[in-house]
Length: 540
Image (cartoon, rainbow, N blue to C red; front, side, top):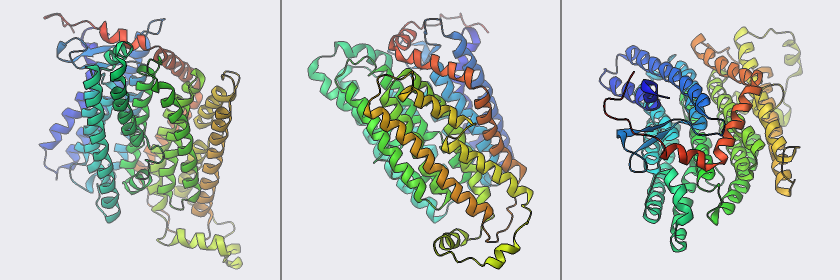
């Protein structure tokens, strides 16, 4: 990238920041203007993200060299702030923008009117996410992390209500404690290594005195705990199902990518800092990710089976996806890691669609329908005459559309063919126990077994809930669903279908991404070889 296009690396941060700042000067009563600005900003963000994705794909040299590096303030690394665009960061920025547009469109039906400053908070959340994906140093990772969290506090409690406020306060306390651990960890890393630039940190590890490594490892361990909390690893994930199920539908939809931020940072640091085994803690860190990830899969699968409410079922499904990703990162292997990236994209789009769909499905249910349906399942209290009378009743078109969307989500979450969830899990299993896998171990077979069983649990839970919702004899009203509400769900599910159709090119991109990440020299060289721009040399 050269000329003006080089400056587009900072655009995913500046675009939502400028939109949020402009909307703060507009009266809250003029929500139409705010909605138009927010929507225009998000569409522009998606356009830029697509260009950056294409640029990152084209900039990589045959030897896997990383892409563009932007020197903020024109200060060279490691003295200044750097933004790094490579295949992984470009993928995450594009995924954020892709998920944001349907979530924002869904909110325009009614949710953006339920409280103040929804659009400003939404844009600040996007700014924090994009900044965390692009930053090249730990301090600014903390800054963008906090911007994202501050916006998520307001969005979680958007719409008020006792349940949202209670879950929001728990979420606030947990993340404030995480922020404190983040600061302590960053301080320990800087105090022992003398740098917070991730590329510079990777270089200095080999020459670090032994007496300093204990404090450095302690700092990295604290940072790992912070990111694992955000990723929802067991036993630090007790807050996630309650928070995600209490959030409004569009907020929960965009929150589907928040846990993936923790996954992204863990993948980035594990490949960059611990990938060359210069620290004794490298092997232990991978074991922690593997076994804690498997424990998270078990915990999430049990929660999925036990959940009667759709919101909690979706929250525990997020835990299953996070546990799967963490376990695969800990397991290692190029094929499995490539499948994990594919699974990250597929599961994020699926969970975004599912959270939006839940509100539409529950809108037509009576207050006590779920409890009554459970009672009837247990005691069999069904009037056979009434059941016979309902034979042949035509399902309304609205319910038919919602049931098709629900079935697609069930197929994706359980990993059944032919959609992208199956492609992702099949690739992971091929990398764990297949022909492309290293020597099969007990850990490999346990990982494969739990991934398959978690899909079975999701299938059972979704089938049970779907039958109760769409086939039960309990009478419910047909929900009033607007086109602007169902269209985002269909768009996200169509994207998973596109992932399936284009699985070959997408998997090649994921393979190239893992190949690049596997050699830390690619990232380090790109950062330190970035040239300052001479005065007057900027040309459009």
